Image 1 (cartoon, helix red, strand yellow):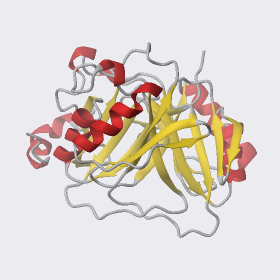
Image 2 (tube, protein in one colour):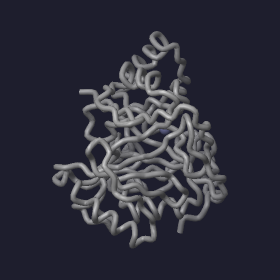
Image 3 (tube, helix red, strand yellow):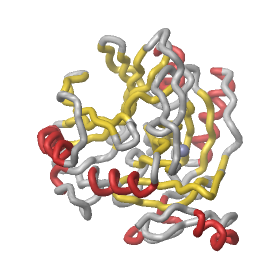
Image 4 (cartoon, protein in one colour):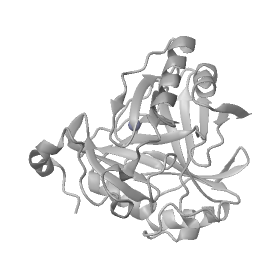
Length: 310
Ligand code: ZN
């Protein structure tokens, strides 16, 4: 059965090595794909996620060595949150301090424990403590983080929008979410997905617009089971909301369309198929530089201009 929710989240980072070290070592995610930005092959594109890079666990980055910092604001993603077992929040608070990473005072949001912190580029992150998920498999067990405390995919995102209604209409009518709660200026939308099933909209009225740069989230991708499901969403966007998407683009591991939602955030719809094992085995994910077939003939000119990772 089709699952709705977040497929992946893509951010803009500074130096590639620092980005890999933070997400694989400090947070314990798996690097599931090392490829290039298909639209600018002199830049890496890293995908982090669980063992197989399942939809709802994938955080991706375009690392630019000399990126200017971005700014949060209207039409931007305020926070990206991961799921951890509720009892592990204390472990993480301690771990982050030990690594020299400041975190916020643990807070309650919709009754859940939330620990906020930033990555080295200033990307706003959070860990949300979820009761009863201790038994779920860890995202990845090869890192420094013990399996019992490991991240279990995305919790969700918080988007800064002028008002919740117009963005909420797209989430509920097209992307399979429903509004479940309100708390202050936050409106929460959810799907049945265990990972990546939450979008919080923060109504931020007259704030300045956000500016893309290091530490910014570039776009949020939502799940479609396959091409037909994606096409149905595209049709609904056009017919019921007057929103046109781009043509479908083949991203090798999924096929995507993009559109700007009414609150100003760049949304993508990405297919669950074919997934990350299409060009390397699950055991080998993330170990070699993978290029799409249209760039493979240029491998010898691309590899030397990419930043050194070791
Ligand atoms: Zn994307």
